[in-house]
Amino acid sequence: MFAQSMYEFRNALHERGIIFCYSGYVTEPVLTGIGKTLKQKLVLEETDTKTMQNVFAIFVEQMQNIVRYSAETESDPKTKETELRYGLLSIGMEDDKFFVACGNKILLGDVKRLNDKLERLQELNKDELKSLYRETLRAPADEESKGAGIGFIDIARRSTRIIDFDFMDLDDTYAFFCLKAYV
Amino acid sequence: MSGAGMDNMQLEATDRSPAIDFKFDEAVFTITGESYPEDVSTFYGPVTERLFAWLAEQSPESVVFNFELIYFNSSSAKVILGIFDALEECAERGVNVVVNWHYDEEDDTMEELGEEFGEDLEHATFSMKKFSA
Image 1 (cartoon, rainbow over the protein chains, first blue to last red):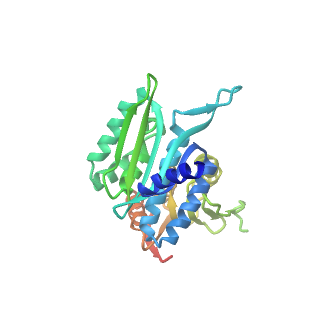
Image 2 (image 1 turned 30 degrees about the vertical axis):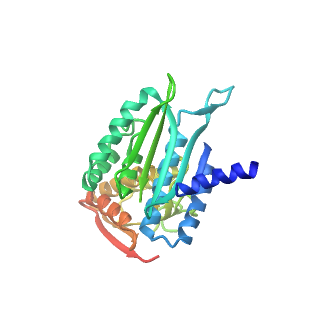
Image 3 (image 1 turned 90 degrees about the vertical axis):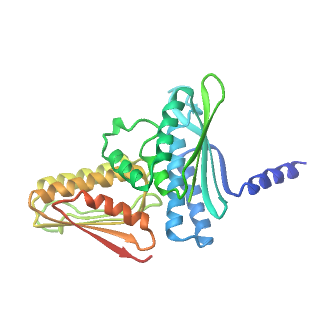
């Protein structure tokens, strides 16, 4: 029964085209490890340089986004400082394109702001994204608001399709946020 | 070492940070590899601090800066922009500054990013250099 359920779980991921899936606490060493393995896999697939770098870059931005901003956290009981942040990340193939998708909890109060920023990115063409990238890079750090800065613009620029995102309210405090980019 | 009185700076590349080769005595600076350090300020802080101080204080005839990056993340982009700004300021003071942006010929994202950084240079000489991996 155990093997069957694990195998079904594996197959459910495969059916979605998923090559890699990580759900858990994301730390910088986790990013390093999965990143290395992802590169190996992309090299084995003989992915062209540009696609490989774009998949990898989107992976890094999404992982660092979880590490920095996921609202599902584990804190040190003494210092109260956040030690770990929980998130989900998957990489796969769909219609001959790579996708990189992430999901994590955010505070309900952040949904609107994030939604507006990402909707704006969806409306911009490549040249407009390029201008926004430059503008944002030049802006002082404190003006680049938490959670929707240069990283999301970089993802949108490198994505060959319009980025996909969604929110779902979970309770009075949290919503689930997910983002998917195709290369 | 020449009379500049400053040690050169060499850092080996790691999985997530580029190799740094700053030859202060020759005024030739090179950053090579991939850049997505865990903490951008921890890695680049000491590097840019010395570079910026040197660029502001010294008046060499010429400075060459080579970017040989395969990949950099969005946090590193801010640091790269800061280096471009410092090089441009140095060139404004009359130093002959040459900035070379090396990119993999198969990666036009890196080509485009290089061109964008280069657009902001008015006094420094900017050149794009292809390499094949």
